[in-house]
Amino acid sequence: MSHEVMKMTSTRFKEGKYNKAILALGSCECHGPHLAHGTDTLVSYMLSCKVAEQIPGLLVLPPVTIGCSEHYAAFPFTLSVSFATMVSVIQDILRTTYQNGIKRIFIFNGHDGNMAPAEIASRQVKIDYPDIRIAYLSEWWMKAGELLAKGTFEVWNGLGHAGEGESSIAYYLFEDWCQPELAKGVIPDHLPKDVSLQWLFAEITDTGSTGDPTKATREKGKLMAEALIQMTVDTLKELDAMDWKYHSTHSTIK
Image (cartoon, rainbow, N blue to C red; front, side):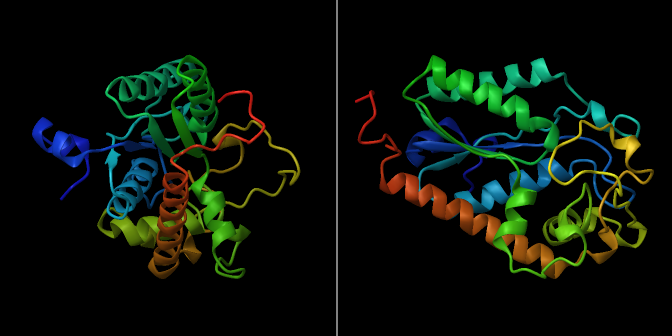
């Protein structure tokens, strides 16, 4: 049975006894000449659905399909909302999920531009509703590099927008919507390693992608997907085992 609320009648929702939810955040923007514009949404949502297959009571919320993508606007086809709008959208989804009786929410983010808005939104909702519990995976592409064996990726530890890692997981999850034969990217050669620069994407690539997508394979994507799913499943099981009560023994909140 699907755990996607979009495909669910109210009867099935009630019968499912859902006590937590997972929210995928994505975008619609250029991912080089070889990946679908909805890659960020597709990856985060498809992995969220696979996680829900293994976690009892986990409802899959509709994905947010357009994110903060103005920094990619030099490449077609880019849709975007403002940072303020994105904060409001995420806040409202979290708030209304809470008001529907689900107070435990896992945010699975698939797009770099959504990282700050999701952080702001979830912190504000936590302040407004102190009994809500929110877990947040902000950068699955970084986590995948940490989870897999050293040497899995050939270039830049698999990083890059539509690079080796993201292209690999796209080939594994939705190969029919990709054009691997067109893959090309740029490895920026002037980015400092210890700080983050607030770049416009056109400043660092002319292909719409960074990293080296020519090194991407479906096999690497399978390893990434399985590792991310298992990590998320393990995290949710750990939270469930403690009834999401992570308070310190010295907390001022009882």
